[in-house]
Structure formats: C-alpha cells, structure tokens
Length: 270
Image (cartoon, rainbow, N blue to C red; front, side, top):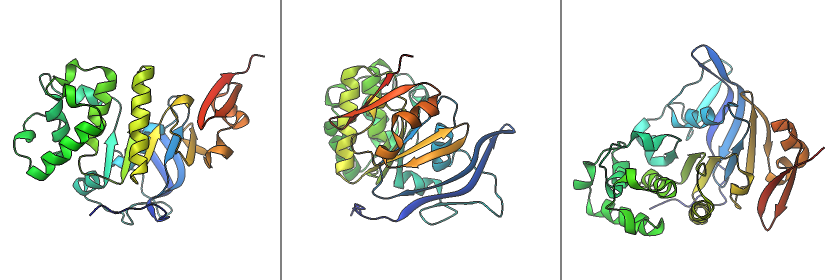
C-alpha cells in the first residue's frame, strides 16, 4: 500500500555542509538543506548556478566531497541502493529524450521505467499488475492516442509527459524534475502544470527547477534560491519570491506579482 505522507514533517533528505567538485571545479559550496514530506519545492537561480547539480546529488549521479563536517542522508541512511532509490523517487532530467533510441514506441518507453533503461524490450515481460499501472498512467497523462507512435515523432509536450509517466511507474511519493517546462508552448505548459498539480493532490512531493515564474506550481510551499553554487535563501514562497530578493538573484530589477495563485515577473524600466 502506498504511504500517504501528507502532514508528515519527517525529513527524507538531509544535506549538511556539502561541497561538490566536478573536474576540479567547485560546483556547490557549503550546502545546508533538508527536504521533508509535505513540501513541494521550487529551486531557482541563474544559469550555471548549480540547480541541476543539486538535483543530481539527490539522484546519486554525482557525489559530494566527504569530510568530518559533512553529512548526506537519503531516507535516514548514508548508504542507499540505487535501484531502491529509483523506486522511492521519480526523476526527469533535461536531455533524457536524447537517450531514447529511434524506433522506440511511446508505450515501450513508459514501461522501460520498470527496468531503468530506455529500450523497447521490457514491455514484453512486464506483469499484469505493472501493465495495469502503465495503462492508468497513459489515461492520466493524456497519452492514449500516441502510445503506438515512435517517441521521436512526438511534440515536445508529448515527450515530456511520456518521460514523466515513465518516471512514476513505481508510484513514488517524490518526483524530481529538472526544468520540466522548457521549450513547451502555452497549451503544453498548462497541461503539464495541471497534471503535476494532480500528482500533488495525491500526496506526491515535487522538487523542480524552472526559470519561468509563470510555470511555478500553485501548490509550491518552499522555494530555494541558488547563486554561484550557494543557497542564498530558502523558505516560504511569499517570503522568498518578492521584488527585492529576485532582483538581487538575477541582478536585474524585476517586479514580482502574484495573482490568482500564479506568479509573474515584469522588468522594471529605469
């Protein structure tokens, strides 16, 4: 049975005094952050600030420098099996669509989430229960008319929905998304926003990166701002998403407006 973590303040990820180097370059500096059940977290910052690197720490595709002062725990453990992690957390990262081979059907792509690969073989051996899960996802994510089409032939919006459906075949309580709204037209943004909000209503906790204020999910209740590899502010959206803080973050005068539970940023003409 799927655990309903709503109202549960337990920390599922704890990063204390974390530093990350890639090719001898410091990417993240002195990170101190906890992620808790019940939080839907926006991560925002300029290009190259370290947002995606923070997500890849949670994905365990990059690792911090160990020291006696640092601590990194996922689900209260410093050691976690990668396969078990994939069952607990769904991931979508930029560029995933490039890993899909030509000729792979959309249905096969989604079922490949059970094996952790991007090939077309696994769909022939999934169980009846797993097949039922996939059919449910296909309906929920408006993919029914394209499941037999080649993934490469889909629109950007359809590809994004198919890849996120693939990420949640194990029905995780946590979903991590790296710029899910990039390159989507207005209609595709609206559909994806609605689908993600439906997941939140089902107790899925979402951590996501976006540059677009208008794409901020209405149920976001925590914002983390990163600049030059450091967390400069984190907290409630009302406290963090304001004109002064965002203008400082992007070094550009921006007027921040919230209307009908959606955000907008308007440049201030000086």
